[in-house]
Image (cartoon, rainbow, N blue to C red; front, top):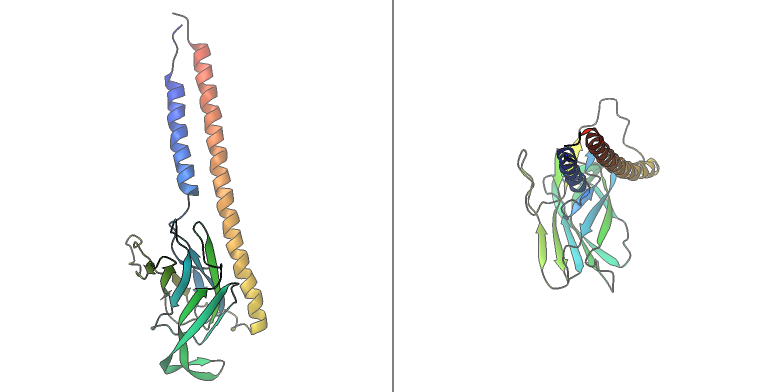
Length: 245
């Protein structure tokens, strides 16, 4: 009996291609310091988290320094306590002053430094988030937060490279927050109480993004299974239809 192997081979090749696409899509992104969420509105307030992964196989992250951009000062910056970490806040003079709720501020936060105490350092294979509340956000397109990550072995990872529009991501990119202009019909800046609700909504948005990504991966996996079953069925049909020699 002549056996026709081409359909099975084609199905296997297609299966391999789809599997590669699925695995590539689901694989982890490059592990560098990021700010989340990555977008916000000019003039508004928001809760942001600097997410710091540990890239070393042997050392722990013991200190994280985040420098706020000089060209985009923020009037109000407050940090959320992180268990096992202390935070030092540095300020600088600004001219002209920043107006916040009718008050003229002549100082702005320039740098935030988190230092681990005890056994709180970020260990290999782990990450830590450092939440910050900021506002009103400046009238600029982007805020670049140059960051230094210090390890227990003395090595310092410098996440300070600014992105270039249209170019590939740099090797050591700094966290970037993209700011969009508020719409003409946008509501006034929220009060502190209302802002808490906005913060919760921002967290829900992150969760929704994660769910959407999971559903996308599930769909690709389902398509992969369908392709496999279809290829096997097609190969079986061709074998049954092949006449004897």
